[in-house]
Length: 301
Image 1 (cartoon, rainbow, N blue to C red):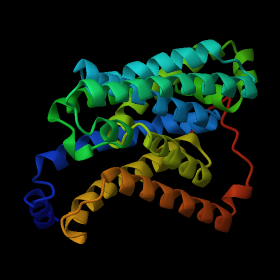
Image 2 (tube, helix red, strand yellow):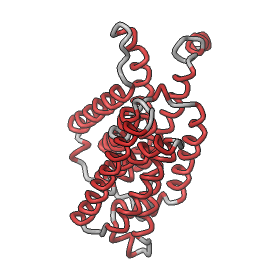
Image 3 (tube, rainbow, N blue to C red):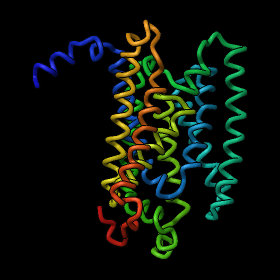
């Protein structure tokens, strides 16, 4: 094992600084998306996650115009969208989705404007591709620290609000009866989701961030009967998809005669395959036919 690690550590793959940065930032994106993604899917907020990811592209595009960190741009716009959706949204699913759709449309309009200005008024090249689809091997090392801090904030928030978030996700009426503020929990969850979206958008782009937020969590929930199990499997799936995608993108340079394929493509493809596998396993083992577990009032792990 020691010889294997020595070989990997000195190989061209792990010896490359862009690869090291991609692995660290990718791990942050995978883990935060898995943790918050489970609560997002349980709560039925997959569309909200998709909207935040797409709207964050406006912040990413604005960051190129203003010359600021793209992580700040993604995060700022995701949080503005989160406040907007919570302000406009109500508990009825139809009206909540309507509010989300309105915010999504406005955000995409801003994204189109900022990307147009990027192209016409600055010397920035490749801004649209970086914002929408990511460029993991081009992430500067200076963003590792902010990505780690954003991830730590998500883990801290989920750790502090684990039980209230879980109850509001599976039984909002019971949560309200127990005195839990659905509005505040919903807002805090959207803010945590915004943090996760920002890290994911930095890694694989705003358009494809939804796959990392929803795919591993959806697959894990199909295979699990307890929240902790779902979080564990979602983390394992997301981390495998991201690190596997980075390795495959790196190796694709040799597969296709010097024309490397993007990391985002491989990550999203692996997430899709994992989800299909989870659906098949759930059907074969009968997991999909079993009733959902009772996870409150004891909130069993």
